[in-house]
Image (cartoon, rainbow over all chains, first blue to last red; front, top):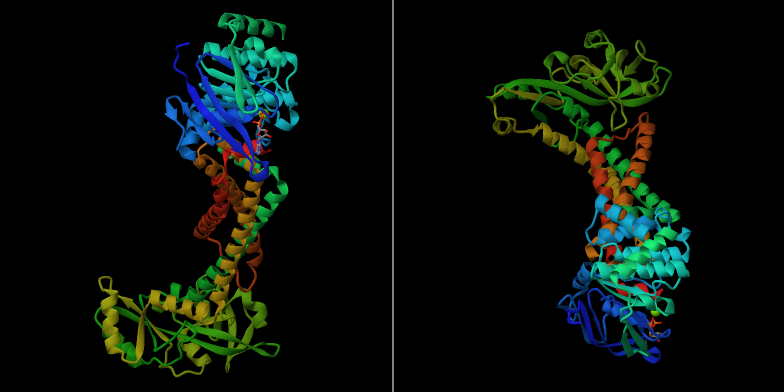
Length: 250
Length: 376
Ligand SMILES: Nc1ncnc2c1ncn2[C@@H]1O[C@H](COP(=O)(O)OP(=O)(O)O)[C@@H](O)[C@H]1O
Ligand SMILES: [Mg+2]
């Protein structure tokens, strides 16, 4: 692909912990994300997936290495600039969801829009729409404590994609989902990548998700050990078709 | 959404909210009562001066308040004053403590206030029974209805003795109370002199009224030059001097102000403490907000909104209680006073207090690392 990457990271190293508990969680990782692509990041537990994702998402600073997002180097940016970069370009789905316990599903999505300056009725409309997309149209007013793990995860997905960010970083977005909902979320992420030309990087162990990927990157022990393109990755019409069928079934 | 989040965070922990509100309530009620007492006292202290109709006061040298004038001024000063350019009228006032002998034995002190309404200087206002004509009848006086018990009388027609003279209540005012706790007794000038056993030429104050185009400052300077031993004060100066005398020389005002400061301090500490612990409890959410890309300003607004909401709720409840206390104090010797200005000042104070309280929480949250979201 000759497209200009929206994100490129070079030689990322990250040390975590102190003293005896010090770990080299990432040992020199390169990564590029292109618009229109759904990339899967696969690897065993503890291999550094979450660490990599949070560094790419500018939430965690790398110990070494450079990251460029939408043409901007992140090295040397202050916390305020990094926050701006996050709200301008990145949607993040946390492995542990990190929903606001005192806000209901709709409000959890709305506050993410509010943070980036989308307010009022249009934002409320949009929040409702994405919650419908993740199959939670009937759970808008439920608080996280009244949602199942899978439902909470889908709220987290809705929150990350509501503003249509150029980069979606999803940390095990289907881990808590049953097969049907897992497929629905993956189809949604694939659709965003294809139709809106966004870059999606999703961490997963789940072989069921392979079918949605354009590219699979494998990580082990803080190092990329392989990357494969999947020519059989679904294209846009197929996904649209799939979504339609699922809606008809549901 | 900022308000929503602030509101939810606030109401999420009811016990902490209750503590916050109690802190604010405590402050507001304490400050409202202290300031209300202060205002009530001030009004009481200066009521006579404020009501008297004259730009300048001639007093004996060093007179500290309305009750402190002595009986030293004479006709000589009156004539000198009248001859001063710009002076329209010079009205004598007699004010003196005197013994009130209760009908059933025992005695108390009253302040005899002698003035003739016809002079247009000072007259009993707020008359609820009887008129000035009644007060001019032989032996007649007017007292305030709130002091009947203390004076051991039942009302209109009651008789008693002031000094050596017999008096009969023929008129009553309502709400003219005395800060010295010695009730005021209004009576015409000449009877006042008799009741206190003073010479018919002696006077406590001269109230000076000016011609419409006269400059008060010029006349005052001229009067000062002419009246060597007497003092000439503007109405405002005498007003201020009385306040200083009663509120500060006696320490009463200092105690009130000390109470206010204490209230503000305690309230601020309580609110700061609860806001800080609330922020600590919700730190993970603030980190999430930060990870979602919120500016630190956005997060500060959430905390300030929490402080602001506490302020508004606390203020409303505090005012409710304060107004209750105010109502209860209506019949006490020192009724509290609440004015729109005071209510507004209290609101500003509450908001300020909560804003200051938010500082430690804001400092805490400013240092937050968005990577905290991964630590749970
Ligand atoms: N805060 C931390 N302090 C020390 N070690 C950490 C910390 N966070 C993660 N690690 C370690 O870093 C490695 C990578 O972790 P992580 O990125 O969470 O893995 P994954 O998401 O692939 O399961 C693991 O060995 C983990 O134990
Ligand atoms: Mg992980």
